[in-house]
Image 1 (cartoon, rainbow, N blue to C red):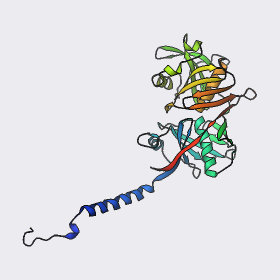
Image 2 (cartoon, one colour; image 1 turned 135 degrees about the horizontal axis):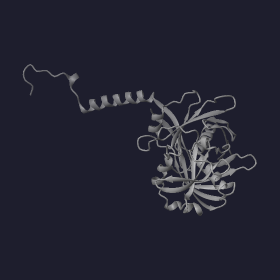
Image 3 (tube, rainbow, N blue to C red; image 1 turned 30 degrees about the vertical axis):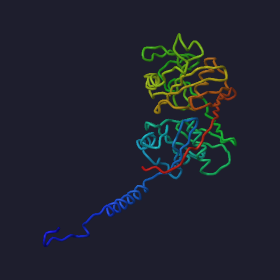
Image 4 (cartoon, rainbow, N blue to C red; image 1 turned 60 degrees about the horizontal axis):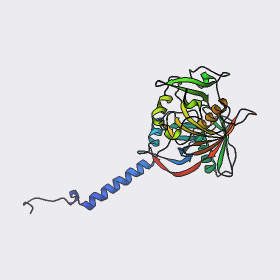
Amino acid sequence: MLARGATVSLASRSTPHASHARATRVGRARVVAEASRTIDFIKYQGLGNDFILIDNRDSATVKMSSEAAAKMCDRNFGIGGDGVIFAMPPNDASEDYSMRMFNSDGSEPEMCGNGIRCLARFVSDLDAMPPKKYKVGTLAGLIQPEMRADGQVAVDMGMPIFEPSEVPTTLAATQDGKVVRAEMDVDGEKWLVNAVSMGNPHCITFGRAGGEADGPGLKLDEFPLSVVGPKFESHPCFPARTNTEFTQVVNRNYVKMHVWERGAGATLACGTGACATVVAGVLEGRVDRRCTVELPGGPLEIEWRESDGRIIMTGPAEPVFAGKYFL
C-alpha cells in the first residue's frame, strides 16, 4: 500500500520485458558499431599449415598491425592460424601481386612456401581465373607459383643461398663456400647441421655427431621436437633466428621431416623447409635431386634442378572457411 500523497511514475518503472528490450537495442547498436570494424578473410591450408588470407590489393599499406595479426592467429581467442597473409598490389610492373605476412607471434618472415601456394589459390579464387602462373613479389624476391588444373600449386622457389653471411649464420663454410655438416653445440650436445637460405634462414640436421648423423638420420617418431626445436630457433649461430628441419632419410627419393618454424613453432608443414631439406640431403649425398618430403601434414614434391639450380615445389592449397573478423 502506498502512503498518502505518494506517486508512482510509470516511466521510471522497469519490468523484465522492458529491461530485455533495452538490452536488445543496446546489443544491436553495439553489433552495428562493431560491424564497421570488421575485415573479410578466407582461411586456407597447405598440408595443415594454415593461414588467414586477406585481400589487401586496394592499398599498399597492410590492413592491420602485427599485434592484431598475432591476436587473429590465436586458436582460442581468434580465428586460429600459423600466420596472416595479405595479397598486396604489385611493387612494380614485373609483378602481378606482392605478398606480406605476419607469423602467429607477430614477426614478419621474408617468405613462406606453403603460404605462397595458399596465396596463389586465394587470388585465383577471388578473380575466378583459370589455372595460370603468377609473379609475386616477396621480401625474399620474386616467386612464381603456378596453379594447375588438378588443384596442385607448383612454385618456382628460385635458387638456394649458401653464403653464410646471407643465410645469415656465423657458422663457417665447410664445403665449397657452403655450411655442410658443420658441428654446432646445442645445449651441450654436438649436432651436425647444414645452413641454407630459401629467402629465409634454415638449419637442417640429420642428427648428432657420432650418432644419428652418421646413419639415416633421426627417428622422428621418438623425437622431442617441442624441447629441442626452440634451442635451435634462438641459437646464437643464427642471429636472425632460424627455421629448423629435423630429418630422417627413408631412401634416396623419400625423406621424412619435422619442422620447428621461426616465429610459429611446431607446424604440420613448411614449404621452404622441405626445399632446404632436399638441398641439404643432396649436398650430404643422401638423396637425389627429385625427392618426396613427407611432413606431418602430408607430402611435398621437391625438385632441385641441375640444369639451372632452381627449386620447384609442388603441393596442395585448399580453402577451409570464410568469414568476417572483428578488429
